[in-house]
Amino acid sequence: MVTDRCRRLRFLKGELLSVTKEDGSDCYTDLKTNRTYQERPVIFSYGGIELLRVGETFHSRTRKAYTSMHGLHKDSLCFYGFYLKIPDYRVPKSCRLVDPVWSAIFDVFACVLEGDDEEVYWCCGCLADRSIVVMDGEGNYYHVEKGKGKRYIACNAPKAGEADFASVVEGLRKEAGRRAESVQRERQQNEEEKRRKRLEEIKDVLPFRMGMKWGLKWGDRIVVPPSYRNICVPVGGYCAFEGNACQWGVMALDGKVVVEARYQKVEIEKDGTVHLTIIPGKVKTINL
Image 1 (cartoon, rainbow, N blue to C red):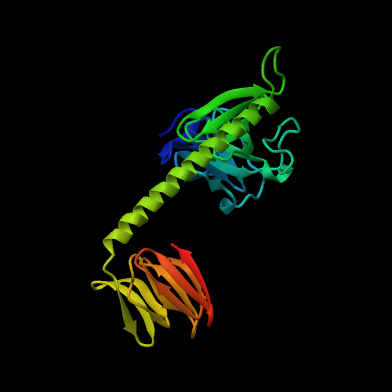
Image 2: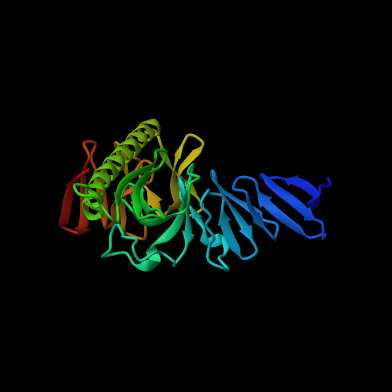
């Protein structure tokens, strides 16, 4: 294609345009931002986020241009599901941290938010629920949660009656802590329920021997690999096992050790009572 200003235009993948000038030199235009580069950009994708690497620097595809530090290696960029972390020590002095006591200047980095084409932000810290607080180029702070986008919370120059950064962040930290604890409890309950169903399913496991070692089998399926000196027939939901010579413990039917193997003898009753012989004549009794 020939025009009065260039010899040829060629559309490239990723919404890039190659322009061959009248003198034969090439330049490349990012059609998303209308910015032009003298070297051909390489597109790097992280989830829904894209960066252009031109020479030794990375460039954002946001409306407000951002260029990374020179010589940044691609492996130093980390994607966290809804934002891309870019190491950058050029953080403005006005940028405040979520936790100034435990954070340092090296904990602050630039980040591109997924679904946000405005600009690249400065990340001020991560909260317990993995949400983050960021600052834009005008000194405005936002709280960002996965799947919810950014929400304005404070600025460096609050107006009369507007909450300051410290008080807002303190509230966010408490709220995030509660959410994180709730998620952890729910996750733990789900894991326990899955394990309970699994144990109910494999209640008929039996010891088997392979070579000199013992494990547990459920039909033809190996539940516990043969790695123990001895394993007794299960009683209820548990069985005694011998790790080293004369060192007995207790494991659940899925192989989870509930009593470490350091007793001379182990006796399990059907009601979950376990008698652990420490030395002859000295027995410790526990309930599982």
